[in-house]
Length: 354
Image (cartoon, rainbow, N blue to C red; front, side, top):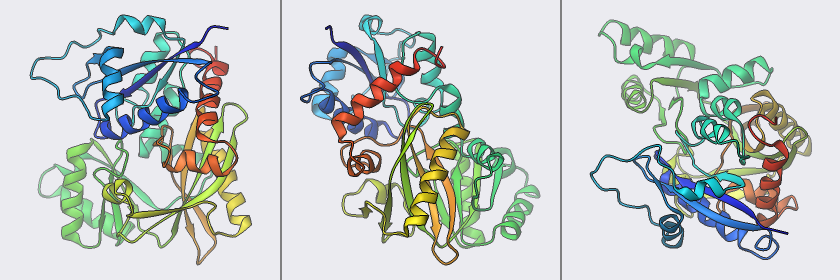
């Protein structure tokens, strides 16, 4: 039986470029491990920070070194794909952040008419944009914290409009609250604010990252997560919890070893864990996700409430990332998990399961 040629696509034009390299290295290692090596041939493709695609030879060098390629000052040659791209049987995109998990690369791969791991254009785009995501979750009846959706034009407006906007945020949400760009991952551009001065600075900062901004009310809660795997009949993993000593789960805390602790299973009541799993599956279905996703929640211990925070349709995928760790505890080791994801992509077929 001939090996399936897996196009491992990583790097990308986002602030999570380096995280993507780490995830790709872990996936490449898993595909080369016993049990997978006889089934899959890896063809790596690296997308530079300027958007240019690199050949498998260069991509392999990046995988070996773990270091991003330094781009030159020349204009990138976009839409010129390495010839090896024609040989791919199934794509495994592991491009975190904008231009990778927002439906753009998924649209391109759909046009290529080759199966790919993860959600389609709809699931990816709805899962990436926090405002669209929360709108879908509200329609599905999933409880959330109070929030306001804001446009950059309201922030970078005339001196009369901006103060009124801040007044409205203070009245509607109060302090503390969180200011977030709608379309960035890994906690990039997010700020926790407690005063008018901090609010104004955070809104200005978030507007520099994205045209759409979301402001959420702060809540005293524990942060728990659940991994989902599957297509039409997905399964939910054991629930995990993240604890940290920093003010909130920011980028530095997330990616600095020792700054956060992962507890699997989460030390929460059994009925709460079941509720988290049920709501994770509801969220997965609501945005039409496929393949895999990690769903994050707030567990308000004082009231027993479980509030959905967000869904991530392309979560971090190193061996120490939360998603694979939750499945490892649930009985699916990393190498088997990667194998399952490729099978799910092939099961779904080209485009939207046609």
